[in-house]
Length: 278
Image (tube, rainbow, N blue to C red; front, top):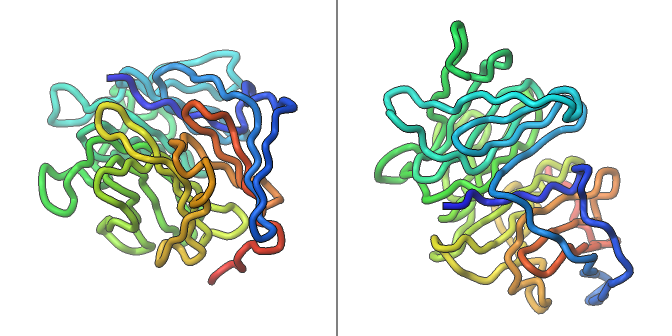
């Protein structure tokens, strides 16, 4: 099965902003479409420009720490399993700890920032991190599509996982993951935390053939997932699968989204941006 593609706004091949923009106005808020967004290969990645890039593909973590001049591969293996589940998403926190979501296997963590748990002598091991059970409330979803955090370590932080069965949350100090939002049959393709306000959360509904086919759209929480509202109801974007959401650095009223087949869009809260909840 083809691993989900993730289109990251900050990468060097970001979509060109062409002149084709259709504005939709409602109560001072705006959705605006940017140009066509081409698809990319069957990989998933996240990066922070200041400390390197990492992607997962073919049961490996592929990484560079010199701007792409050279790349290396670290095998993704799970103790006790002859064949590791296929990685489908990756997140690296500010300390270099890696979190990988998989297909039919839950999420795993690697705290070895030197060898990246590559199986070499002295390397660490990938260990279960969440939703790894065969059944019950911690059962593995068919696919984990995105992972995010609310704060850098060592501050208290909420973790988020978007999956084919809904959006999951783990609160600071908690050991269990709980479903924060999710409708049966809906894939949650993306989760993004506003870097200027860690209680403002965005999640994108998507399309994951052949696992699930549903409408798209973006859901928003102003209180760290306690309640949710839609940003896209009444707009064409509500029917379009979302592949990625980015809150503009330094301009949290601007929210960008890429889609399957309908280009890239911007939502502008303007002065209606909800205040940051504690």
